[in-house]
Length: 484
Image (cartoon, rainbow, N blue to C red; front, side, top):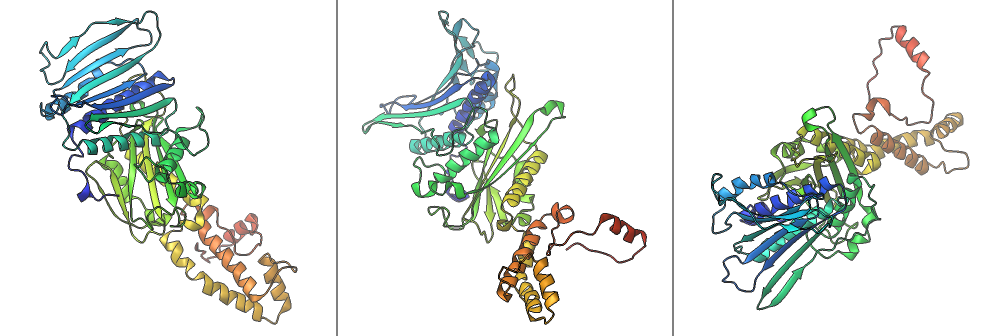
């Protein structure tokens, strides 16, 4: 993972901002159609390096027809972009499912709002009774200082969209460079080693599948690692979600979090041993987006130590990604993905603003699920300290039992420990049994939620009758009982 100092100086280049916005709205149009759609991003660099517009970018989708209002948010970007980098012109072709024609427009955002040259409607093409919908937006950009770097960023960006495994959405990226070295095409595979995902598969399960593939292919590389893919089922996963159902303005807003752990370096041989940092994948409305300051603050203020993590620090890199730094990490790798979106299909394009309370709730839920499913692997720092005393304590208790000359006392202890007469009752076996039970008790009591309701017992004896406890309390006994 690159450090902030090694990040590209053009991370927030106008080209990237522009393409991010165009892809965002294309995905939203596909979601609004509520039917299978295809989104295609193509980039073509002509052979003549002296051409005035050497880089042609096209974003097309088969979703609902676009509204020109969608492109007005690019006004600010057009004003901050030098004319020599982008002249502000959008070539738009769009049609709705019920339209009888295909409409063509030219939108120049560099022109003043009152200028007649700002918007032009071009010749209309008729469908001849064909039924389809979609939009294509074409722009011509000046060549980036490093075209290969721009293509690498675009490839990585589209691969992150794949992580969500969005239902009813197929995405393809085509990059064509024609020059003295010939033509080069870059295509991204859309396959997965996971089980088949049906249309009915929940979005959070799709995110789990996509995050596994993303991690097993080492992030933004196109080739999968065979050694890592063999260990797919050994990854430990925690998921959590939270939603707003009462606030009218945010009705249906949903946050989903997936945390994925490679517990030891041998789980995935190609991953770095005890990787000391994690880049958090952050999505809004099915598109990778820079993390908000409020969501970043949630990550930094989370009680990680209660779940076996020691957060050393964190920062937002040049691209707006959150990077968490771990101290004395006992896991080989930690991957985290956060997705904020509207759970119900919106009828108009609207951005989902992250809610810090939902993010915190979903993140905590994912950590609790991870701990619940793999309790021994995610003990809190306090729980780990207590576990250090278990061997000595178990040895002392086993020694007392074994050294006793009272056979009736020994038999009762063996029974309470669940050791039958046909089992090994040597001092070593008793010590191991006591140690296992103590470890289980610590695991079950390692979260605040379990301290009162789920406290197990060292010995397999029945709880005192509740009526007896109530009678004791009514007797005015002043003895105080504290939780372990």
